[in-house]
Image (cartoon, rainbow, N blue to C red; front, top):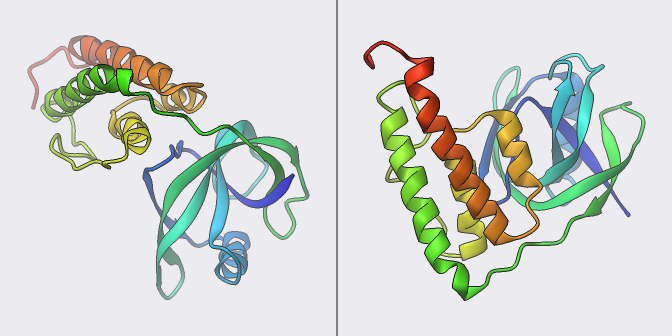
Length: 206
């Protein structure tokens, strides 16, 4: 059983995807100092109820290990970019003093099978088309031509990560047991999201 420093957030981190953060709370600055002296890894879980700042939040039990890639110190905060690695399940939360920590159990990595190639191609087409369509309605984080990993499992997670979905939909994707399930659910959810756009934005796109 591993013990990880934990960073509960209002977003879901999927494996293979980047996580930009601005850290200013004293407890998380202390956590980053300890991480810098260790292996540069911490856990990210979605907040179920509550807020990122101040503590007292309730958290979902599935999360992703984040590996720090770049750190930029500033006067009153630290900017960093981490990247999602393996998934885990929280077994037990420990004391939040000096910062949140938990005992975690790693979840199995997804395995690629060549017969999933056609599903990958279809899901990629649907996600990139959705990014292009949604860019007409609102500013997108990811351009439709964003480059993805050559590793197929990482690419499947990245497609789920760039798909413009709601947070709870991304959490559902994080629970996928196979690459096929991940791709199929990503395609289904993003298709539903695009179909709902005319109802959310009844006027002409701005």
